[in-house]
Length: 419
Image 1 (cartoon, helix red, strand yellow):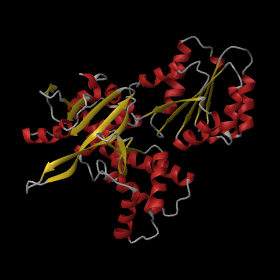
Image 2: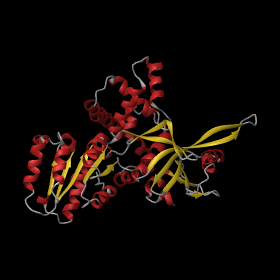
Image 3: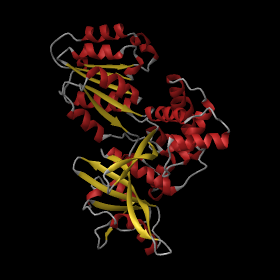
Image 4: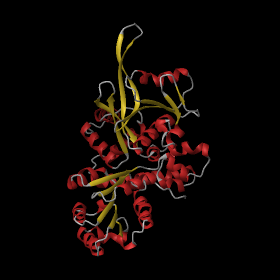
């Protein structure tokens, strides 16, 4: 398999050098964190002339390093190799496996010549341990599975099948070395059960493991559909006859799924009122192959998978992403004014930038185009409005400034938001 450079993340690691912080590489298991740290970044350091004895690499998933899971042994080992005042690059893979790892890192921060880079695979590790303990002395580099552009640098199949391969089997780097549907599906199913589910069950006390798995399937089936804990709890009570599954239990289970970086929540945002709507949210999977494997590849709806892929691309580009709601008044069939909501699939924000984006798998006629652009025309501000389509079309801009762009161009071109 061709080497995938992960340039976006390498640049973030390089730019964080010398900031005095612990550099934390977070992300879904098997998405490439370890490779980024141990290969790409280490090779870059070597290429910059950093001596090998000043690059201290510790792989805590390696059985032979089991003794280093003792915090004092790890600290003594690292400090024992720091024999001069020159900068040492300390690279620790899966640091959360070490008991009291925050104390180890806190001690290493006392060394002015220590540049510390660590990886971790759950958001609790970030939000509770690192942020609380170090009070702003950490820099997070969150890594996602391969973007479509990264996927294409190593994909060797027919180009006209590339996008469907991507949304069917996802962007875990190892998927590119699997040949054929049977092997790809088996790999993804195995990873889901033996890595992600196992991690969650070991980390949390799950009172209803079968129901937890059912919840994950419901979320996987609900891409593009708004849900909340109360609605999900009612589903379990009515269809599964499980009165003990409360909305609090569901809320906890959803947080566990998010903590493992399997999904992200997109909140609903009132574009006109400029406030969040505390009701239903949407959930998107960080890797579509895992999502499809959870459902045994039985619910392959390209329209929803494309929507998820667009969401992921926006997150990779550093945007916060909400689901937009536009309250409007329209005339019903009796000529009476009624209130309704138009939905904008994504409101993407980064600093002063904002984009409104609709995902439309097909635009077969003017009526469908009108339907997709209608919410945009009800928004009074001047931020850019984009329809991303699965159709093979040329980029175009209508009289209202609304841009329509094919999904492959949107995902591959880093400047696609500004075309």
